[in-house]
Image (cartoon, rainbow, N blue to C red; front, side, top):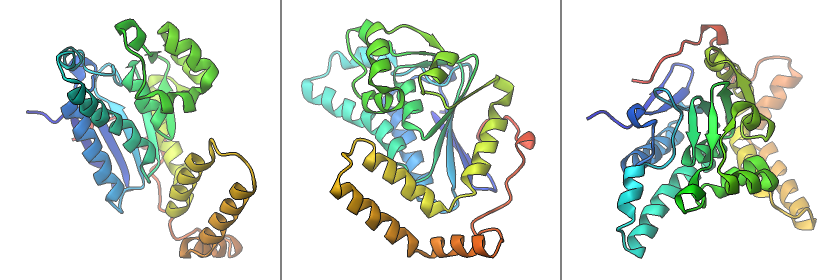
Length: 275
């Protein structure tokens, strides 16, 4: 049986994860969710990996939760429903808390949980053909598990519209409201992601991971004396690291930092599926 999640790591430390249920537009069932979480955790623990790109095989990025599983869950007890929901919610939390930078490579249909994956990634690049919908209310439920990530990405005001209307919107609107950072034609997706990876790798790996944690920590924090003290302690800790000393030394000596590795030019990036 083919794996529902594929992954590969190239020589530059770029990891690619592909959702691999193209016949159902990469809808998320429990097995796929578990495979996705374990794959993400393995890549996060791998020191060779510098960033993770998440994509979908076939015509769509991800159509959200699997309808067959949703139908089955209607027969679950309250405890079974909770346990299944908790396992599914871990998908988005795992992506959001990954130490490595994450990039969503978005195309085709993006529905429900698919939008949760996009929103949980640090960066999202989409093609002009992508369409989006938070369709849960039309099924008599609500986008609860993905709500922390989607609201953080597009804000409360836009969430009030799209959570409630469940209308379909296009890639241009996704870009306008902040769900997508970049919008390109389909043939330029890989090249744009290659450029972003090259930019990410100009930063120290530890510094990038610290920056990710800091954003999550202060995004909803009140700016007061405790925050001021915490940020001061944070930068003082970072400045004392070997990586920071190397970065400062490289700057002063006008040389490349030790963590910089040659990145393949974006124009050479080939569109291929993980094996």
